[in-house]
Image (spheres, helix red, strand yellow):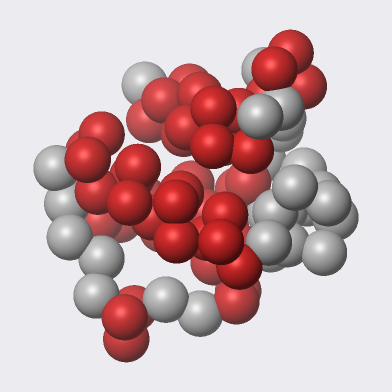
Length: 81
């Protein structure tokens, strides 16, 4: 399931430990989680590319993708499809 894998990536990259499993599609990311900074964006995109076997180009990335877990999930689901 893409959502579970994405939550695992977020938990690992951000060091959320048990808080990663508690993330919901409505959970805020950028501006909400202090661990979610610009370096985290790069690390999360790299992990998504490796885990799902996709390529994310620079022109596909904007701040809206990282507003919530749900918006990031929609982006990843679209890339995998």
